[in-house]
Image (cartoon, rainbow, N blue to C red; front, top):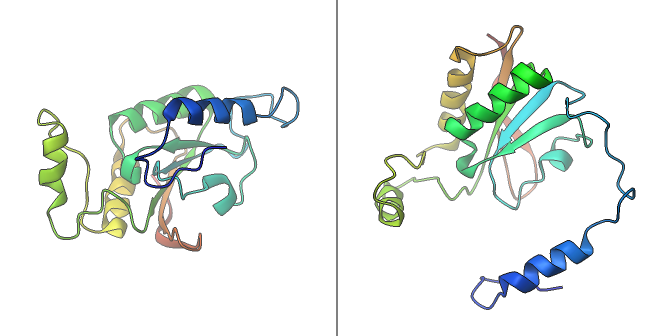
Length: 175
């Protein structure tokens, strides 16, 4: 299997080939019969490869929808996914799970300029100066979301990527 270091010497075709060849054959990994999450929960977390949302939260396959997006921010595509999860699949609660050492953490205010250079047309990359404040802000957005189901509860936390521990930022709150 190809080992990825800094990415400079990685062949993406070989990496994808290895990934597909290593995939479990049909029937090996048990899966729930329904797309409806058993716990009727969603977790919004970052795309960071160090986060194991199921393992770190002690969830089984099928317990919750896991929506991954850069920075774990509540951006338009996350709202689209949550709308489908709540309206069509019965989700009634959401955990916003930020993390330490996030690539969108802009503690010194220099990241915005570098991100703008990537795509000058994109106005907002949803960077933040404090992970806990970003999580609290996004929990507030979801509590005020006009399309939220009834009942609806939201919580927020920051996971430490070094040890998997979760600091509660906003305890479960009903809207």
